[in-house]
Amino acid sequence: MSLTDPQREAVHTLWDELADFPASGTDDALLHLMGKLSGWLDAGDVVWVGAARLARGAAARRDAQRGWRGLVVRQMRQAPLIRSLSHRVQAEQDTDPGMTTRALVAGVGRLRVYRLHDGFVDMDAFRQTAHYRAFYQAAGITDRLFVGFPVNADTESFFLVDRCGTNQRFTAADAELVGYALRGLKWFQRELMLSHGLLLAGAPLSAAEHRIVRLLLTERSEKEIAAELGQSPKTTHKYITGILRKYGVSGRIGLMALWLGRRG
Image (cartoon, rainbow, N blue to C red; front, side, top):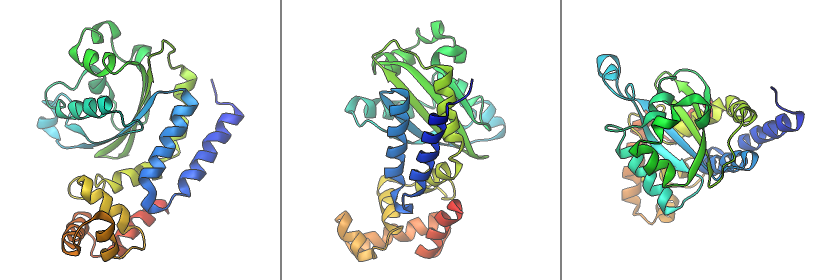
């Protein structure tokens, strides 16, 4: 099975479009990517998860997710139910990560694309779980494509593509298309991780810090950033100082260099 010439051309056009977004436009670029994947695959929603390895050795072996945790989640749809379920999934990682999460984490370190109904998990057993009833049945998710992409040894980027309220299942051709599209975007997935503090920062960025990082990558002054966020200049400066410390740089030029280095 192979992609058609029009499909390859569409993917290459997408790569070019994403490269045209400025460093400060990572959030918009992610939504653009999600919209394209949704349109190509007739999907109801697309979710991105930035994950990191928080434990190694014996501690990881005792852990249901082998030491990995999803730390940042972004959805294409902003429905209240989806946001609520997303927060619940994150909260339950330590106690009940679910069969699909365990199966996805088992393959860390390589690009992988799975379909929910292709033997990825035992569906008869999965349907009997509280996880399935809460996070699939209640959300109306009837099928899902899972894509895991290693960014480095300790971080992975995951895309979840959902079909909702339909019996039409994803095909092997659908999986091939999304895998091909994301395989060529390692630079962008690094940028996603970087923008949320998951690649080089000492700890994930808060929502407020993430907004400020986006503005630091523009030509706005600290005073202008403070005004846009409705903060005092003193508060904004305190945030900026902490952000630069997390990234291990001494100023905005060093911060921009991290992004330019990823695109080079």
